Amino acid sequence: MSGSISPLAPKTYAEMPPVRGVRMATAAAGIKYRNRTDVLMMVFDRPAAVAGVFTRSKCPSAPVDFCRANLPGGVARAVVVNSGNANAFTGRKGRESTRLTAEAAARAVGCSEGEVFLASTGVIGEPLDATKFSGVLDGLAASGTEDFWFEAAKAIMTTDTYPKVATRTAELGGVTVRINGIAKGAGMIAPDMATMLSFVVTDADIPAGVLQSLLSAGVGPTFNSVTVDSDTSTSDTLMLFATGAAAADGQKPVTADDASLDAFRAALNDLLRDLALQVVRDGEGARKMVEITVEGAESDEAAKRIALSIANSPLVKTAIAGEDANWGRVVMAVGKSGEMADRDRLAIWFGDVRVAVDGERDPAYSEAAATAVMKREDIPVRVEIGLGSGRATVWTCDLTKEYVEINGDYRS
Image (cartoon, rainbow, N blue to C red; front, side, top):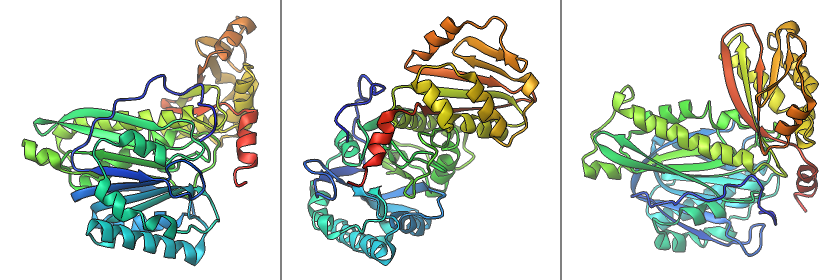
């Protein structure tokens, strides 16, 4: 956690009420950071349904491998998360560390190792000494409380400057259910499935298979539509748990094609988008949030690839940091995306100021009007390709000197 909070941080945090069926506790194990919590344990006293999406990196962390192996079981009783060390690119030692942690968690909770899920975030390539925190799991399992979401969010931060929390309610099967979520992430963020680490819990009674389909669909327009620096983490993990506590209220069982899931799906997707945008707003060194919408592409998929090409361009991002309406760099990013585009049909807007049209600068272009938009904290950029009906929106942040400073000495 850096010294100063991002200027794009939320002015207030969501009040995070308990979700029945999950307890949490944190500890300071001194894995990397001094005088702050760095281990989180979540305990489900009754088996919870579980779904997950993970990084598509070809160099995943040991905890990602471990979770993937356990996910088909569909049941969770414990989650252990540490910050300060990603336990990635750690070979046999990494696998041994996950085994040791899982054994300790299973003992503490009284479940099988197949019902334990693990996540680690922090430095890549440094062996993780699980003995530092495996000994505290008994205490965490016993002391966990339901009303601990904000503290849980703090324990999983690395270079984050603020904890990321969100909560929603929805009607499902005749009763009101709650969804709470936490996330961490500020750098190495171009999720190719989910975000760096995010844990979402609902008291709804939803089978694991249905939960998985909801989550897999929900990441596309949310976590998979944000980027801070174009780098996909080795450790990306997003997990969704359903404790089933709402069944006691009379919640009717649901199936995958159930119309009664519509409100829950909308609330879940809204929560995922909320958390994803909080991650972008905490982008390392970020001073501006940028929403990039591409319309008129050959397909939605093409529009998204063009939007990400713009969002990931260091030249676009540095222009935004310098409050320079340099639309030529947007043209460059559209052209290099690999998708169909016609230079002479392009139109570009910064905010509501059209800066380019029909392949050249807008005849009515006003530098003063464009500069006024660039001075905002939140900057919308819109690009009309003029070829079809494909549309996509992605979110990113600017690229500042602080990003280089944070990442130039991350290990030291």
